[in-house]
Length: 391
Image (cartoon, rainbow, N blue to C red; front, side):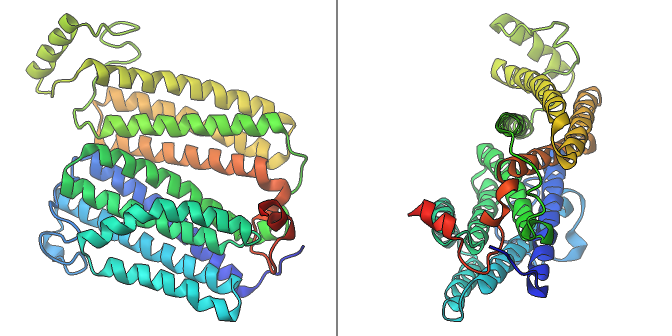
């Protein structure tokens, strides 16, 4: 089964690329918001100090308000871009009589969000996970048409936006952790969607090797570890207490910190005297876990690079880049501690972590699916093999 490359598909591909780039900018600015403690400088949502976010006076965009308001605006545009991408995929892959069904759903979701009413937001957010699962099943049942993945992306971005908003309204740091992790997952997903709509992928130029089962599972394991590490990092950032362990490579002067009640009392007395917030044993061990997992990731990615030396040139080359990125990530992590968690350094550390996750996701996708690109690329007709599997 072949797929024709057309100007319409080129537009959809580059729109997906633009959406992915916008998502990375959103993640970076979100990191700045958290690192600078600007998350609640705009205390209401979906408005900004009572204004519609698009009419909020520029003269009031100062300090933390600038960061938080910019984050909201960028998030809104990423949501709109995702909606247009979903509509474009549906238009290209549907028969004339079916086109307006999907377009109407996309428009309906955007209109409902435009009402800016909390019950509507919460209802759409509650339905979003169900919509993602349903779209995944319909994707296979519809012969690999990407229009369903576009709809899943729309549902995910709605959930992401609402989580960010209710984090402000409900003052729940835990929601901020899920908000950050979903952003990382969405970044990988929207980038893979950009890859699936590319000409190189459509023309089956990724099917240039025999799959290596061990190598692809190794890539998946490395990527899963990085995602876990980002979760630990998000937990640490949203504690808003600075560094629970202020020294490196030791932890309070020891290989393993003493977190007994007596030791924690002494640690907190020192922190208070130094003008820092108190910490607890759990937060100390979360930070230790972050260090341990960093060592595991470094070892795993180095091992992957070694194992990939006999793979195709693209996998070999990008595995080397992955190693370099992990080394840079470790250096930034160390400097984050030595700089007492300087906001911009911590943000760069988080942003590079997102790129490490992305590269792992792309390598995993290539190793699992590169030899059967036609199961994922915009088909001129439903893929009969996928439909048989689904049945």
